[in-house]
Length: 398
Image (cartoon, rainbow, N blue to C red; front, side):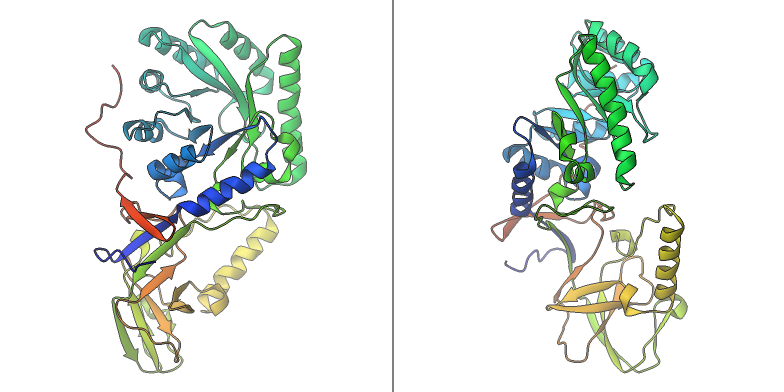
């Protein structure tokens, strides 16, 4: 690929062909008749929602999934007319806007149902609805014991088109709990069917359960992580070959020589053990590099692992150090990462100079929206600036 762009010191490359490959691999595992919802929430996991959504629709995704209404509106305002579903509960004004823009909404409580009916009546259009059931995640949704009356009321409503019903598994836990959640959901569906209530789209699988439990695919699967080339967290048997589609790149700003014993960075956290060359790279905390999400440990073993990792980082052990790749070689980031820069120690035999391209392991969902995305096909690409919802567009319908 040509070494571009020349107008920026950092950029992200998104390989559309890799996404296409991943989707083909996923289709191979799906049962005939099962639909695919491509999840493009969180700016398509940092890849850029609009161009990625366009590509996925072109590749045959049946509909798109997002968390918030503003994410769905971003797609609508950029000319994407295909079916889009919002997972999160909405405010009344948001339901008005969603219904007017033909966006599928979730109902996870009797209150949600009341608001949707009222909004649909005001708009004069039927609301397209999926009912959300909470089987053990503890976020949104109807409890099993309160679900049936709301489902019956939804079916009876002249203001609503009930298109689906779904639940969300607590990803990353043991299979036994996932099976327990699925059995709860399945029991509800069986009970509804005995009452003559058959809902067209029943879905519960995200990436982890999709790979581990094929019998849970039902009518539709909701996939994001695997589409973009990553296996989900937890013990997942890799039954599919995925290709990475995200690369964060930059160029070296300067190369400097330092004597043994010199300190690098704020708080002097790293001391050079030998005479060394150091490359200055214009990527830092503001870009998402060196920023870690630290969740609550899942158990004592997880806690111990986190503690060992922190200790190794404090001791500057290479095994846990941040790295980058330049001219085909791995280099280690030394010292604390600055707001807009980081420092890489260059191995003695590696020739580098300002302007050389560097690839850094920035987590895609941490990558700043200000970093331009370039979309590659056959090694060539284009840039799109679509990360921000146009402020000139109307927000809510009054």
